Length: 74
Image (cartoon, rainbow, N blue to C red; front, side, top):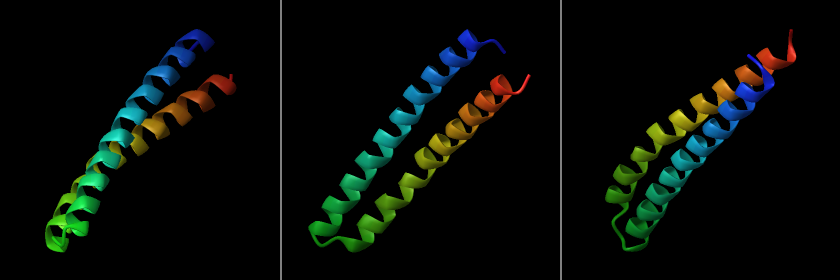
């Protein structure tokens, strides 16, 4: 993979990572609001939805790291 392709992939992955983290943060805000309103059971239920976008962000980060390592090692 050439440097230009790696840079394009990294930018794309970073945008997708940010999207997933923003989604997780929105879910966390909703859970926090529910807990603040006294609905702790609902807050826990809502917070469980954070897992998938964080998993996806982590997977994208791992892919970006792998591409970086491939480009550094000839």
